[in-house]
Length: 437
Image (cartoon, rainbow, N blue to C red):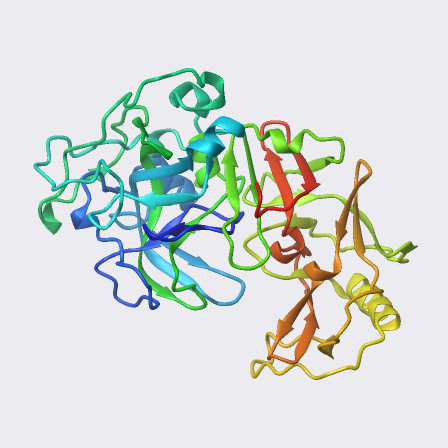
């Protein structure tokens, strides 16, 4: 999941679930947040979705929900968010260096329009001149138009010198009762490109998101929301119609990078490619065909990985495997690791992990783990991607057993450029130092 940043923070992760969401005022039950909570009443482009809006209908599977359109999302760790679906303006900020050397759609920061935002289009609200302003995401949640056609700063049109190609809404609620709602009346998304001396800001209005009034669980106080990148029609990547997106997750606290569109970093000789498998009954997830696992040069004798498919999901921290694969891999790791065993210090039995060791002075001599995907795409997971510190003197093997579909989580994806070509259903990946890209 990509965490929406506060104005002074930077996102570092990405995810594969439904639509993005952010804590919103009035917030009935929200986690502690370092920055200000987003207040729709201070926005000039916030629009609640009515129950007849296509995005609302897509979320609820065609059933008739309450009005305005509600949502509830539960995560695997029992964290959950409840609120209403709406559309807003989002700002994608790219440094000038990135825009000229890689792709101007790469971004270090995504902010949501509000009075606390650094968005230069944010301003005191005036009057409601259009109660259905910018509901395009509700009418066409998966645009057939490419993002490059709408965005003059994209790689399809780098020569544009325009600093502003369209304007954001100046029609905004002045009170709660004046909050505009969107049903089926709409126009195309409004895109504004603003160039400064050190950055390019692409402001896109009409993006659907969840305005969270109750947000409970394991949410990070340094983030202001979650931007989600699944294959369903409500995800951020689907609403942008980018065709491709990629990310590079860093080890530690440094910011990673998210790119919508082509990423030249994925075209090198060491790039591996494998097919993304789609489940029409569950379009959110990106499934891969895993054929085996090796520890060092030893291919493990794993007969099956389950019938649910294998998911790549950067919104999940640890890798997971079903019983047979989990037992074969953990048994082999125990056999090759000479360190002194330790108990998991976690007080939560649900999160406790089986393989823990006292932190050694030397980490050398432990073989890499390789996940073998179809098409000869071998994903090598080095030591620092599958062992992490826990409780000071203890390190643990970052793997959980599951009865559900096994997952490649975000720890295993660190320092890897990962590209999702959603038009052609191809996953590409290549090793990289994500802090230098």
